[in-house]
Image (spheres, rainbow, N blue to C red):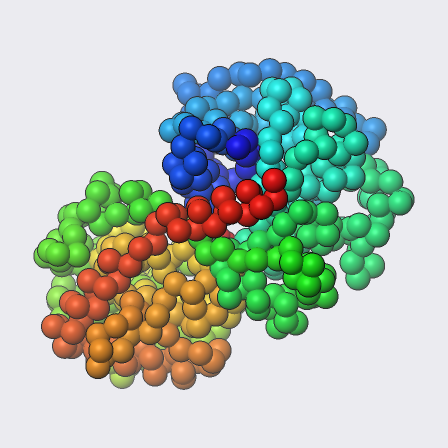
Length: 479
Ligand code: GLC
């Protein structure tokens, strides 16, 4: 089986979020499960930081020109071969040499170009996959182009497309004025991408793809409702009725995120010997400027500071929690200005109890995962969520709201049976969240029970083993 994954980011090359984790680890997992029967490749843009950091590994494959409407642009194709998977990088400085990956005025054009290159790459390197597995709106046009522009060509006719939605909130919405001029779509394809009077690229991919999935089962049901769908529930219900919508929960790279092996944390440890976790905790307390006290629990968040990550709730009750309980709170992340300012203010007000770092810092994030006791993730919606799984790998107990992938990966702890791998609450309500945090803080005082819970958490299987097989099942069904 030949599979081409297409996305706007992939680890270890470039990452702004969970998408990169998935695109950097699912292909290897699929290859591992299929063995010799598979040829697995990935394509992403060549951002300047990749060129800098991976210069020695990058190998030029070929150079072509790619047309997009009246444009005719250079397209260099580079590659790196890593653990059995070929990663292709699309080189064009005009489109990809920018300060940020997204948020440029011409993102629509940039990723339309990238999507066109994905299809042209197939003939340029003579690799026509059985499956094109595209991800999120940035590669939605690759699916649309495949079905609307290329499928009359012999080599492309047999290619089946799976489109994965990692977050329905980002759809690629544009004015109809650029349908032909930028997206190179004729008037008769207007209805393919039309939604609510605009071009909606995600909608177009949902309509065109042979199969669509989201990154957890619960989320694939949630997005059929208005509350979660960002307006697209009608389209998704249609796809669901046609049997084209499913959900597969993400795994994580359990070798990379491993308390036992991670070189970035202060001391490695295992579920059977948690003594090393105490060393990480003490280091985190020193770093945060807190009292170095093993009996005071640390609640941590590593997250984009966005409302839908639940920061409304946190903002509402964090002071109460801090004042009424013996607890320390650490927050790492960047995001909405109002939240950044508020949490900086709180950190200054409670320097001994609240530590806030406004950065995107992978190494520090792992020190926090390893040093904290509880990991808070009260999302309003969460397609899958990776941090709750990552935290678990370091024995830090997740406290989550029961939605999307959080509901599919975390089962609430039952103090009477000892079952479960975290704490959870159902309603998007600040005091419901506070109550469950306080419950967890009380549970923490019983070190026998707590250590048992930490073991459960660390022993939960978050590898790709099960989910990679589910993807393979989809690929096989499509063929
Ligand atoms: C997006 C989603 C997140 C998911 C990730 C990887 O970032 O918001 O929930 O885990 O994609 O699929």
